[in-house]
Image (tube, rainbow over all chains, first blue to last red; front, side):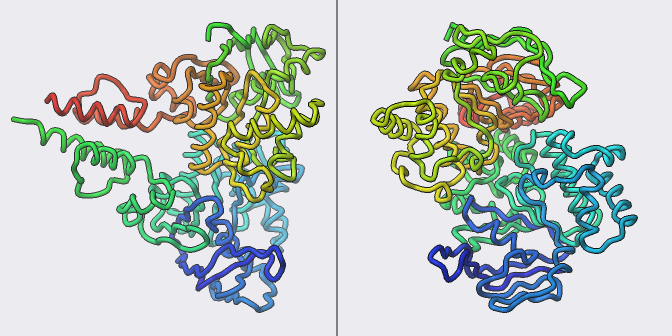
Amino acid sequence: MDISLKNVEYRYSADTPFERLAIQDVSIDIPSGSYTAIIGHTGSGKSTVLQHLNALLKPTKGTVLIGNREIKAGRKEKNLKGIREKVGIVFQFPEHQLFEETVEKDICFGPMNFGVSEAEAKRRAKEAVKQVGLPDNILEKSPFDLSGGQMRRVAIAGVLAMEPECIVLDEPTAGLDPRGRKEIMDLFYSLHKERGLATVLVTHSMEDAARYADKIIIMHKGTVLKIGTPLEIFSSPEELISHGLDVPDVVRFQMKLEKVFETKFDSICLTADELTQLVATFLKGRKPQ
Amino acid sequence: MELPFVVLEDISFQYDSQESLALNKINLKVYEGEWLAIVGHNGSGKSTLARLLNGLQFPKEGSITVAGISLGEDTIWDIRKHIGMVFQNPDNQFVGTTVQDDVAFGLENSGVSVDIMAERVVDSLKKVNMESFLDQEPHQLSGGQKQRVAIAGVLALRPSIIILDEATSMLDPRGRGEVIETIMKLQQQENITVISITHDLEEAAKADRIIVMNQGEVYREGTPVEIFQMDEELVGLGLDIPFPVKISKMLKHKGINLDRHYLTEEELVAELWTSHLKM
């Protein structure tokens, strides 16, 4: 299922004194099975774009296509349930949304709301818990007796149990320790690889964007500043920095080296391994014989 | 920096709902004017420790002394005068309708007179570079700005210690930078003791001293240089190695001669440059 936004504009509290333009003229494509990262400052319009991906917000101008369903500005849209089932959003700090008595009930809540039978929802809960790397016996526990990291996983399992075709992640690792961060990111990456689950990652982490995404969208002041592969995006790091954005550690370090050694390496490295190899070869090559 | 301002002796703590100890026999000293970073995996007991320090929770065993006062039910209000806390979520701790109201909130609660209050509000906001935002409302501020207002609110009460409980973890890189810069300035210019509980190792690398927590115990204590020598051991504890250290190591593996692992990118670049000149 492909998702695309065509010339989308969104105004919060339109036609009131509090009206505020959040995004304008945004056109992006999220093909099925892709891994897209959306980056940008707080207030750049990332979260507004995200909420259009399953019609939580409807554009005030332009069109959103989700599969074969078209959401157009100025039209009353009914029966959006199907869309919400296919596009799952994991919001920031999703563990704040846990509410049920047991983990199992909490995970079953979503699918059952979409008309899945109790037996089927339970089967899915069991599978989802396994997918996020939690033991079976956690299903009977209260979500509020779990650690923060476990609660986050339960909340993610709740979204996976809806069996979405596309999953949208809003800063999924905020507040986790480094190991937890890596585990969660690897988990989503393997879901993406193994099941072809289309993934949209909204993040501040340039490292994660560079490591996992096939395509990066950079938002700036409510518009799309740039779209490209990680290599394309980070090949002109100066442009990002001039917009007050970060670049991955590796890229920034390469820039510092290039400046001190007054040279330009042939390409931008996106991994520490590539960069150290390049630097080692360079330094050895310059050694006088 | 020689006087221990906070002393924890054999502190143990257990939450009612849990079977194991959240903190197990913690011994710890915090010195006046230092910046102490406490790192550790989720659930290692870092935040519990912070909550014990100003009496939000009481230890099961052991004693806590702050500024020479032994912490107990009857002394918590004296101790809280010495300690200001800044929490993780900027939105949960903004109580005023404007920036200046928010900073004044704590002062009002402790019965400071109006003229002193006005002076302290402006003064505290100046220290965090937010004095031009006096009448702004919370929704007009970025996360980093809100956290700086939270710090100003704490500063207005003139504490000796500020505890930051993952205060930068919900911020974007720019906001994180703003807050860290503010902390540095306060510690250096105002001689405030800073305890920062964090996952951000680049932030911890800037502290004077680091304590590594693991499963409710103090696992290791040392300067950033000492702690980051632990290397892969840190990864085993659920933490990570700062980027410049990682690069130093990889370069060594690839046959580049470095005499140590560097903690900042600047040092590493400078070293690569000078050693290459000598080659």
